[in-house]
Length: 253
Image 1 (cartoon, one colour):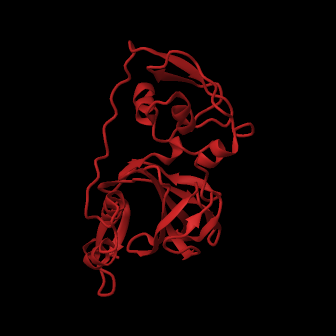
Image 2 (cartoon, one colour):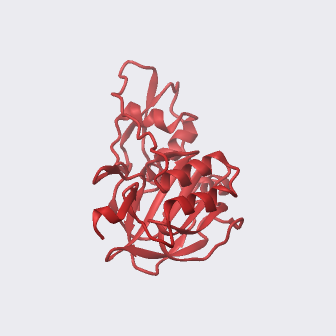
């Protein structure tokens, strides 16, 4: 496909054709939507909205806080919830790069905290805590990273190289708010986790869920497809309409 035949949504080319056009997708799906966050998410995926990629500020060294030593299985998401601080504050305060997974014994500065608290580890955590965590949607290797420049666009999720036909599972429990073909992303599922967070699963070869379904964490929602010759799942985490780095939420494998 030559450049004149495609527009671009995120990092994935959206073909122009008589059957599927960007305008048709907008009309078809936005008519039935009442959730503003979902409207913005779908609009950004089909190239109608340019989302603010944000800027990383230098860490503030003289602010009040404590150092937390990362234990096995902890994620930035779980640490932020345990200390009741915003995950973006942790990222800014520690200058954490987009490709980072937390390492055991790594020190994380917790801005505003007065004392070190225990973060429930995965084996000993309560059922509710584990259910609330994000999990990997598919087995594989990350080959595309958040905020990675691809052409003139920033990647807003991660690409996980896997086997074609590999089951794709829900990263967290939620409700299906989109399950259909989306130009440029192939068969796509969007889950609303009912707390302001959404997860997006693109490049599936087949979908196994329907609009309105309630989904448990780890439940199969699709089968992985491919991008070009590479078996790949495209995965995003959004807080309302803002794209977040999935690696900050996923446990180290």
